[in-house]
Image 1 (cartoon, rainbow, N blue to C red):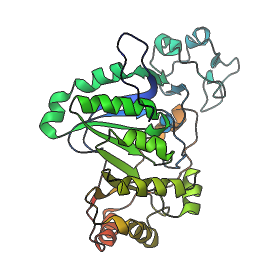
Image 2: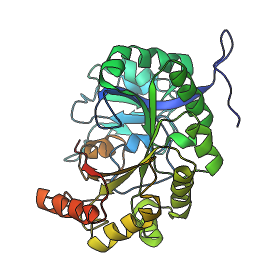
Image 3: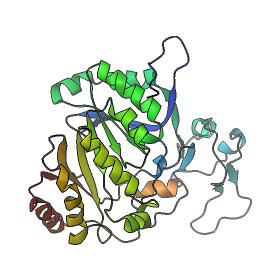
Image 4: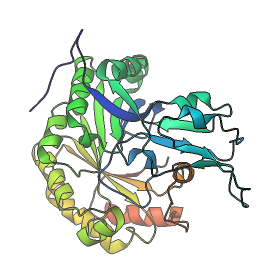
Length: 324
């Protein structure tokens, strides 16, 4: 399967991550440490982690705290930063960033900036380095029944590292989970599955055409991987992100649940989580020089969420609303 053991005294495999977050209670059982992988094959319109979409290093710029000092300009070998010679128009700044130039990840601008307006997204970590952070909270995992969850971005885009990291966690007795969009080769999914206690598997829209409109990819591969994981007796919980007017209608919800009907009696199929739309990541788009395409509020009311729950309960499925 291409699994390599963690090497001691030699060069270790590395992965590109964008965050390691402690004390999560939303992404699997108990208190968990989340490891966020960089890179994703989907472009969901509502994504709350836009810094996880691309594998490359990225500059995040907080324009509201920038003092236009220009300290970052000579420090950047890629010449991403500049100071305008022209008087800035209303809403603009002296400080300019060329978003078309790829960041090299040197972090010099981040280190130089006196106002902490700049940060570089992306860090290359070895398995040992990530494990060191994970093991700091062993006591929390033990007392709460928690563990580690790999997410992103999309973890299956770096499957060898993920499988090795999960293998080491299992060796240490740590519960393992991954969050996945499911858009990967079956071989990559199975490589990871060998060391995964729980899959948190997204179904963003059951209709392939609509899925393509919302995410940029069709869903046939996703649904096939989901079916295969359940058939092979891996523990799976389906997660349904709910975005008003995009995938919350009764026909879509019922069609999704009916797709899952053949697996209803499988003990390894652990029900459905509903993930309501939120706008927690909206500010990050501007900081990355991107446009957030959703302009209206697509949140669902309590009444609407309750109604969707009832539709699913009609099929006698365990269902839970997860609110971040």
